[in-house]
Length: 325
Ligand SMILES: [Zn+2]
Image 1 (cartoon, rainbow, N blue to C red):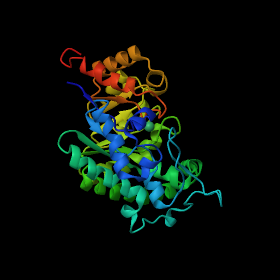
Image 2 (cartoon, rainbow, N blue to C red):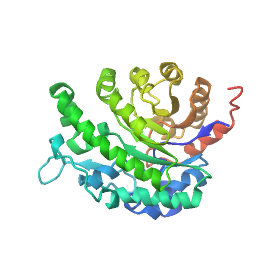
Image 3 (cartoon, helix red, strand yellow):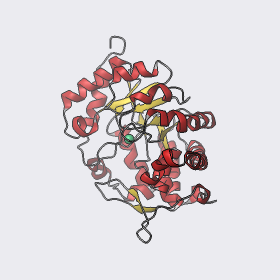
């Protein structure tokens, strides 16, 4: 039976209404976070529960200025309104507070995993999530400021990656201890912003180290165009790569050549958001026939979409016999 499970958020407003657990409260309330996340299994029928919906829990715990979003909108990191600056400008400013794991945004995910472990441990996969140093740098230094360093000051960029990777490791170990069976590691070095060689030269060595230091299966997530860097991603040592529908599934399977499993890649903005159910069936069948190991939406689903197309992914995958696919 093909596995269906999303490394990224499946939270939608209709699932919030069904549970009474709404954005933005769920980001800082473990009981609500766990209850909303469990709908992936209880309501949608997926083989995994992933309680960390957004991208900001680490940055918020580090002290970045937040826009917590609203019922129909994800939270995001903002520059400080007082200074119009992000949290850091220099790698030497980065330090991990001693109480990082106890700070509410970090602790909420840990407590949610503990709750889910009690309720579902051994029954369904519990997926933790951490952000890699590339994405953490977008949040803590600002995207433009950080990407400029690729050309302007590669040594400084590497110092930032080395320091921020320690946040990834600390939070990953805490989530495993709290009950995560596996981890999503999102680190958005996407083809929409950077060249494949930038992944190879800067981030691949960091990912190889992270793969050695994280004692559970890790699913790397990068949205957007990634086909040109998949041969490098396949050398990361991670268990799987969660990829976007901007990349053809057959081409992706060929690019990784059996060195990493693939998860994906049903289109969000067109197929799922617009509820094109026959297109869901076709994309699920195409991905399975191509050799994608776990079927999932390509990225965090749009919060305002109807959740029915998400159930359709499960029905479509279950309807396909792997042996003949
Ligand atoms: Zn994504």
